[in-house]
Image: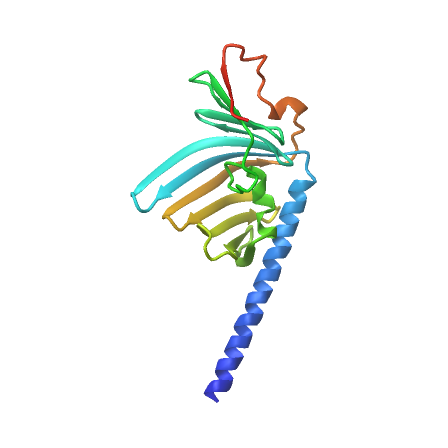
Length: 209
């Protein structure tokens, strides 16, 4: 009797886990599709980085506008432009801009913000952790057990807008992206994602490509 109950428990646990993953994938597919069909995705956010090892935390405000893999990311001391091939990192205070080709394997938000809409499709298992009247909480776990990431947690509104994003790493660092504004209606001009060198003629350009 005890063995039968144990087998039943394992079966039910596996069934519920599969249902949770299917529900999570359905939500993530809808979330991704809505962003992909919009002319752009604009966000204003607070980025909080906590280091549990050194007992430190850091908070900064920023904004980003995305169109496919192209983006312009504005942080307090740095503006990053990416046109799909080259990245310009502009430091206004130093009057300096560095041009590089980005690492295509780096799926972090800071390197490729649009990955938030597609990262779940390859190398991750997903689980619907919680559903409330106004949001879903979905966890992503890397299939590679040696990954530096422990978990990615997305909080997605019922209207399929991003509420927050959490990256939890094995080295004790956790990054929280709390979204203050989310807009899918802006139509960016083609030059939005390229550094306007004609506007900043006195800026030193360092080309690392």
